Image 1: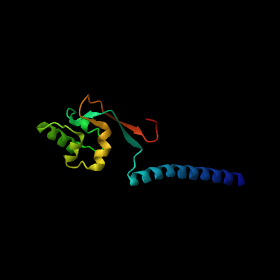
Image 2: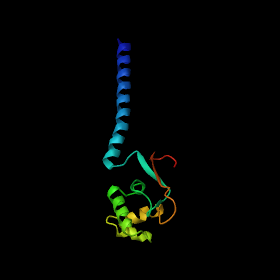
Image 3: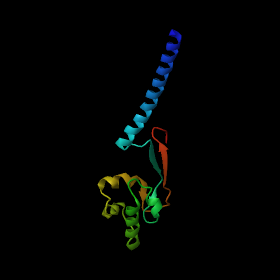
Image 4: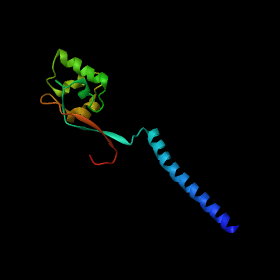
Length: 124
């Protein structure tokens, strides 16, 4: 009888341990989602020529979505960009966003930009 109780207690303890370990990882995932932090991040490499890049290439720029990409294309149809600082005249591109996209834009040359999704904490 003692042996049966010992086996039952050991099995119960094992189940509780598995449950708690499984809950901890899902709790961490839930906390990450509540904070708005993803397990993945976008890595941008290359440059985009703002006078020649299409909307999909402009959308690779950090913080540039479809509407801002369309605004860049619409602006250059009338008059090509002669200075990168002219991007600041586009609605929604302020000093902070401008400083984020500056390393990835150019006025000449080929568009070589690419955007890749990688797991956080891995080497890029």
